[in-house]
Image (tube, rainbow, N blue to C red; front, side):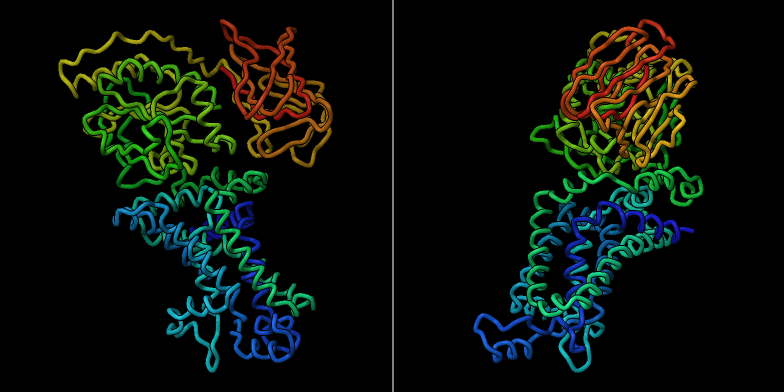
Length: 597
């Protein structure tokens, strides 16, 4: 079962946009270089034309000194990727931590090796120098000839070190197991099968590249040029990795596999098999001792570490914070996302507690755990935090490593940690602010008896009753909820019309719409959305440039939309109510979701 889950999860990752950065290298260097020439020999051993010195003699000399390229090259490249990815995922983080080395040292090593191999393809003498350390390995030798089989394997090792698969439920479970050192037979099976699954599409492209080169005479006769192009592509990939260009490229391509990933994540058998949403480890197993609804202090084990963070802000020099260094202080860890309306209502209380109790020994840490792809952009997160008035330290947890390490499943979620580093209270969602503040005061007094605490903050608890509000409604195809129209909600559907009858707590579309995985946008000048809602507050997450017009229960509201995705208010009333909102969205504006309070 685990092997099948790993293969499927890896294969989905292998066909996702995450393979785009390494695809040209795989196609050219992994495949085309192993093509056979028209004379039955390895084409890579033949120069396409006479060298710069001209004449047949030059060409002949180069051919006799050329290195034979193995037909096994594509398989060795992929084998190198599987071995490198498996070892790095399972043991890389743990080994580097034990050695006191930065977590990205292996990635930089991979970039350096990739660069050297790229230069070696352009400058053969350097290639031979790089191959010498591997020449004594028996399984990389070919009887009677000097083979560059081995060059494919180191290339695979380097690519495995820099290849970053798209995050998914299976990878999340593997990553947490590796980073916490909880590596058993099941984890190894899951990791190896995932790596093989992710590599299979790459092998397909490598073999396709070889087949293309063997069938087209122009490729067979220009293997020297293909070597140089392969080397140049490796150097470009290495340079792009330094400046994070592949990640930006991936963000431009819609994640067409996200729906399948979500289906896997929601499958109960898969969740049970790989402990999704909470891989239990020695570090976090005692969190179960906390009742999330408790209004009094409990003891729930040592707080799990904050790990896998992309970057920090609101700290001195944007330096990371280690929980172990905060012994003696009370710590409040808040999991949030800047476009989440529940988090937006909760944040004023976090701000108030930070302002009131920081001098008394409270350290608030926000762990930003993205729900949308746009929430992974550091600039968006920083701007979102500033708009909410957040001044306490924030960790950007784009890979959800810390989220998973806490076995968290909610936005927002609070974990209150005492001065000894023990989790004393867990709360999921909004509410219980008065009780939460009382527990903070109690722990501060325990940590520093006689401390003078400021008056209790007097912020009102605006948490709405759950039964009175419409559930959050997403407009992207991968997470669509509460669609009340008659059409199939798919990227293939373009024309929509309001239904004759629309259920309460649903939305419907009218006009020509372009549906993407995370948002919807008009195909023409404008298009419309009709919402039947329940609640006292309605907001809409929008992005782009333009003026959105909403008719809220007969009253016209104009919203000037500008910039990256953020939440805009459509309605705020004193009491919960039911009603209809019709929104006209102009071209150039993206609609992500409706949120309610």
